[in-house]
Image (tube, rainbow, N blue to C red; front, side, top):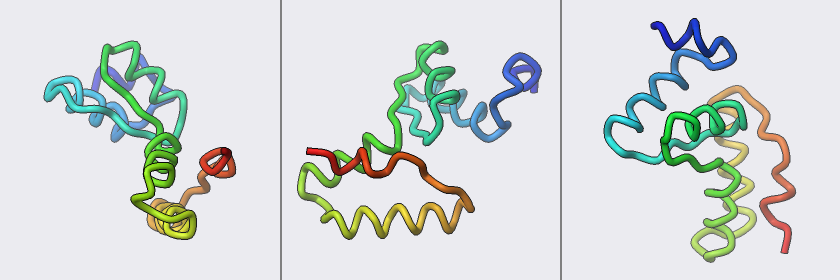
Amino acid sequence: MDLLLKEPKLGEGELESIVVCKSRDYTFAAIDRVSLNYAKTQKVKAISLHAILRALWVSGNLSKEQVLNLIRQIEEKDQTKIKGTEGIFKS
């Protein structure tokens, strides 16, 4: 994939997702700023996972405990640590 050579900081899956979002006019969602910023440079609408989780909490669709549980599930399944989650619940 030629994009991998141009953007070595991004994984193949991230790049593929950005290409799909661009071709289908979808919004790209991610945890990390590097891929979000790259998507924006490619004129792809992008939103952070933090913004999605905050919207779920602020709108009342999920309680704080449900959002925290969702974060734990994502971390487990993706074997990652989502940083800055305290910002999701700031008033």
